[in-house]
Image 1 (cartoon, rainbow, N blue to C red):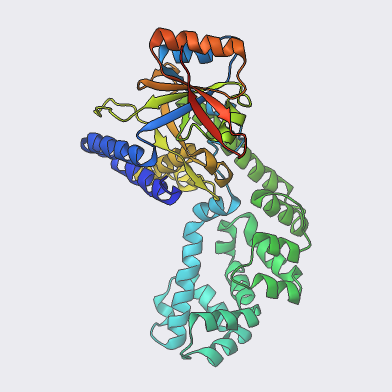
Image 2 (image 1 turned 90 degrees about the vertical axis):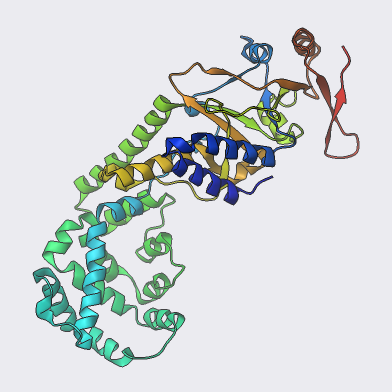
Length: 423
């Protein structure tokens, strides 16, 4: 079984290479070799339950795989790209944050005498002048300037002098032009700093500080996500900004809704896996072992430009996030990044599902939902299949000359066995 790290790197390379049509066949062949590496002899499996309309049996008879709208999947996170307040804010105000970094660099040059204040822009001069007039900041820099210390020691010094970060941030945000461009957070941040106790300031100064620590330091303990916590923090610190919070909430709700609709409009997905003995797969997808499992043989495919191959699912503790840059700036490079993230969103699942070792076939939503598959090399009957359903599968297997095996529960271990069925 190939690791999710290797699968993620392979998928990213595959997507990036797909920009060059002349590489299509080469990448198809690389994907096929990757598939053979992750499977046992090129076999992939589809677990099925019996439905009243006979769709599962029809797929077996016609050797097809049904591809579904991702909105019907049982995991509410599946095929859903994450959104965060931080990623939006960074994308929307990246230039302003870059300006802060640039201005601080020029401030240090002015301090050391390697740059004249007059060489800076009007905005830069205003902010640098305020920094130069901050006695606490100047004393701190004078005491530590020129010391040969490690990054760890720098972090410790800043941790022990948290007011320095506060002073610098408040100086930047006191500039009207810069603060007005930063929106809701510009007026919220100084108030947050003013409300944090000394103990709270120490806690959020550490390298491992989280947004929850930041919120708790301000008395906000709601059990909610990063977006909700940011809005709750604003509600406490800036109760008057009702309309701004409503606008932000609408933005995120609309982004989530639009992404779900786009996934539904663009893709249908067929799901297969690498192990027919997986007990949880039998329980979850084959009606508690009362269904059946189809084995598709990919071992002898002749791969060409038109071959439809499945793609490996990546299992991760972190959800793919929307590229807000693409949403806010439709330059070619940003759109390419958005395509990469959307594709990874379709192929990434929470680590708790890693036992599935799933592969996915992605087709256009406008295509026929039942697609042809490689030959069926075996059909496995669930350990608890009914006599009626068993006979229905055997009848099709006899017509199509499919090999059949019966799954049997081990009598002394947590294991399943596949016994040959004669018919």
